[in-house]
Amino acid sequence: AACTSIPDWGDDPFTLNPHFGTADDLKSLSDTLHSRGMSLMVDVVVNHLAANQASGSVDYSVFPAPFNAASAFHTPCGIDYDNQGSVENCWLVTDTPSLPDVNSENGDVYTAMVNSVADLVKTYGIDGIRLDTAKHVPKEYLAQFQEAVGVYVTGEVLDGNPDFVAGYEGPLSSVLNYPLWYALIESFMGGDFSRLSTMMSTEASLFTDVNALANFLDNHDQPRFASREGNDVVRDRNAATFLMFASGIPVVYYGFEHRFSGAADPDNREALWPSGYNTDAELYKHIALLHQIRDLASDIGGKADYFAWGAEAVGTSSQYLAMKRGPVLVVVSNVGGQGTTEGFSVPASQFDSGDVVVDLLTCTTATVGDGGAFESAANNGESRVWIRTQDKGSYCP
Image 1 (tube, rainbow, N blue to C red):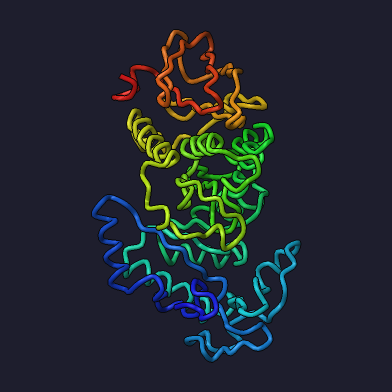
Image 2: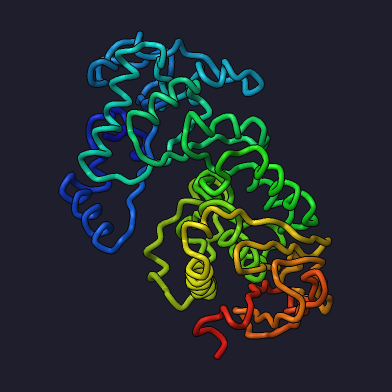
């Protein structure tokens, strides 16, 4: 259920938030998704509940048992983000409305919290979970949560240090890929591609399963990609191309496909329906095409193998990054709408000398030279997705 002050902050882990519908509505959604071969993920939090008072005057009696006592929560304190113990034990918000921090060390309390989510998964056929504020929960309790729910869990660990974030893989099956996101923003918005290329190889060495990571360009806690100074739809398309073929699971936050440009909360959480669900929007069509190409690429060698392969950067410059994954070689650019007449010489690829390859986004062709090298011609700053002509399927007839 929801705290009365902020409707999407929960104060009862045992009931659904009525702002989003009824139990029957959720069951119907789950059944409909599964009938289409789709999966249902939900966003949950076990780190805290929400109270309508400041931390010094919380009325704990309004919470359901066993959360209806001060002992169910840590002693109120503000967070020192340079101290992980403080991150895990202090309160995210102490002002009104506050977020009382669940006392994970209290076995009855934390077990009740975990079981509430496990019951949600079982009752509604949930296939995966985004775990809010996972960084604020000790890893031993995250592991308890993961075991109890028994489905894919990607945890929110808001930190750009890949060594730190990788420590949450194991306790959880995945994390939101903030280290890659920070590198991606820098590389596409004015930097070069060296940091992004380095981050790709660093994560491949640090994470046991880099393909389980949840990659994103936008989310509800960060300024939208389209809001960033100097951005344009060409950069959007390039970043989306990278997202769809990088190692990991691409997460497209609603509204990106319509170039929503809200920056700070609540502007980055705007409603979708005023867009009219326009399927003719430039980014909508681009993402749809990328989905189809990704499906083609994963069919060529078998989906299990494709999604086990990681993407590997094979060349960078100040303006370009080339990466290979399975049968495709992707070239993305950060020059944006100003375009460029300078192409990119791919120094090595998975293709053989003499292969003719085609860019599935424009149907341009190129011939591969020695060592897999070839010239990816300039495309007015747009991305390219290269594949051998014999593997192109029905594309580029």
